[in-house]
Image (cartoon, rainbow, N blue to C red; front, side, top):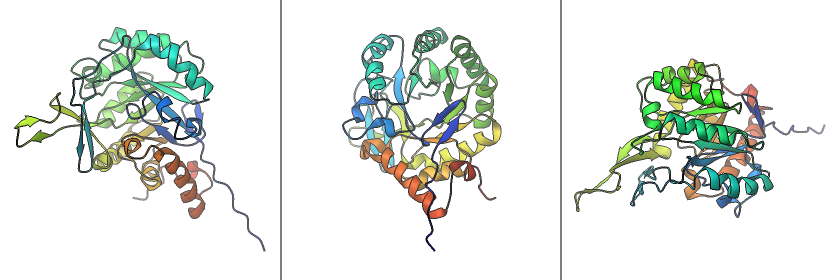
Length: 309
């Protein structure tokens, strides 16, 4: 008798969005998406998240802005970007032509600036969602202040929700006392999904020069070193809210991604690994397909959140 294998269904739902697979390129590590097109067809991704966009162009922090660590990297880019107007005019048409599913990470120095960016981006019919950045640890103003308390987070998300009908994802910081409380505040304010975690605050110094290795002194720690922390926080957030949670933090392989789905994540974002291997997102998609085939898993819905305790 000949047995036939069923092709696994990798599609996932994130609120009202249906993505072809659960692998999303994370903001800040994938540029505007166009930089990776020479390596592969970016429409193969579940989605990509464009680097943080602000009302006006932002130069970011002075150099040195990146330091490699034994299990990842520190960055203090400072949300450098081309600004809202240029992004809409020069990047969006190219993403549309490539048929990429794209999400835009948005940032403001004031709540009013968040509203301006959100309102303007909402005019884009091709935009899948917006990700509200309330957790950049290397910018001394704006989102980090709004996202450090449940009250500030609730008010910011509520205001953005009021000016946009697009799906809203809220990217949370791990640098808080109770991630569940923060996730619930975002949900109560109207978020459609939670993304976490952003980077942990860290620093590096040169013992010879006796100076910080980053011009900003501190920066965001990312990479495999933070994966256990991210996994724990995603698990806690999934228990705290009913809306989808998208897991981020040190994912380098299909098995890493499956860990996050196992604890309840609806999808995953891949960040720092893109710097080491530009094809890593495609490798992870293929790896998830292989994992599901070997394990006899027909769809991710039957696997998600089945952690045995």
